[in-house]
Length: 320
Image (tube, rainbow, N blue to C red; front, side, top):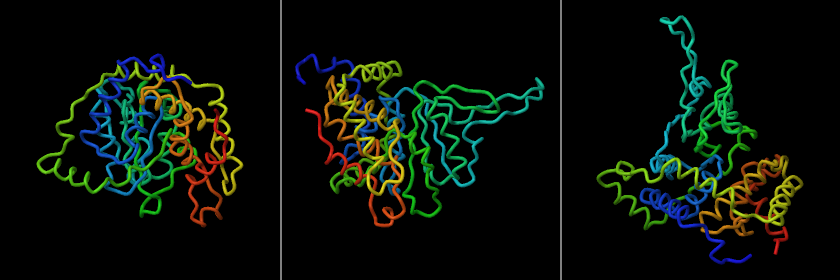
């Protein structure tokens, strides 16, 4: 694979992506690839699950992305008493016209923050399933389409925390990526304190990208080249999870599709017109690990699903 000028995307998409990334970084400081991965999922049409301890910036990251785009944004604070109708909406009787009228819930938006999603009951969590998987919701026998930009950023606290419910496997499979933000360095933590001494940087955040420009980037992602060898490489990785030791349920075909699209988006973000094995290897854990279910014996031994994926990557031959 060559790296000549023909393999670098035109400056228009690159300038838009860099501008959005820089805008986010005016508020969020990160010592890992979380911002890049979030954008890769967003540009490839997936949804993101952020799992970490409270106070690491999960909610702020979602707000910053929404504030950087000229898009509608809504937030749902998941609580134990939240009902599916609180998310989807309800029909209310109009006394003037003597008929029921549907009042849409907060799910009808372009960017949705599902905050602390695992504090709600599994029944309420499932209200998001159809919208995330099929870009529509069914309410009282009627189907309502979601906006084409519909993007869910869900946050959750570790499952061992009090008052949390594990997300169903079917819902975990709907998230394109799941990763942790982690703690920032000591130097960055001091800078965060300085930046919030008088006001929060979110208060002065300005949108820097339009919806038409997002559509342009998503079209460019779909046109990023990926070879047949790399497609088979992705399938081999996904299939290997189904027979891995200690795994009760491996990754679904949706995982392979997601990894391919996310790798295309990552290549575009990095200014390349083609996918390389490095892109696939970088995103394998955040796109696959959360979909795996370990058997009880392996769970009790302290093993992690991310370890399973890393071992598969280590043993899998890499296409030349």
